[in-house]
Amino acid sequence: MNQVALFNVPQDEFTSDDHYTPQWIFEMLGLTFDLDPAAPPGGVPWIPVKKYYTQAEDGLSQEWHGLVWCNPPYSNVEPWVQKMKRHRSGIMLLPHVKAYWRRDVWEDADGIMELSMIDRVKFMKNGLQKEIMFPTFFAGWGDVSVQAMTKLGRVR
Image: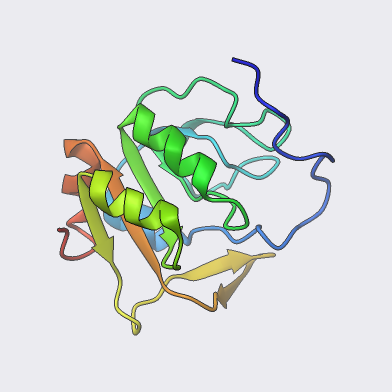
């Protein structure tokens, strides 16, 4: 399958999509992931992952393997969701927005976990915590993912 290039320029500086999941989430989950298909250049040092794809490798056109962690670019979430639905093993951190793909996730994922407004994820940007403007939720596919998500809160 030939995939159209995800981005038309190489990433050599931070963009509005560069908000990284804080370390405490991975400490709570207690998992080591096999793949992060949406990583920045050089990866994120505190994400426990064996392999990652950057924008240059185009994680959407690569084969996904094992347990996947995916905090996709929020400017274009849907293709990442569709790929995870086919892969069926991993956790996604997604924006809680009105979009067709969200309903799709809620109907397809094996587990959904929302953080309260008080516990919103404060993403890392340029080494500093920065609270995003909207709430997020976790979606998990596979028993290992759903079980780990229960360490963060109630999973439906």
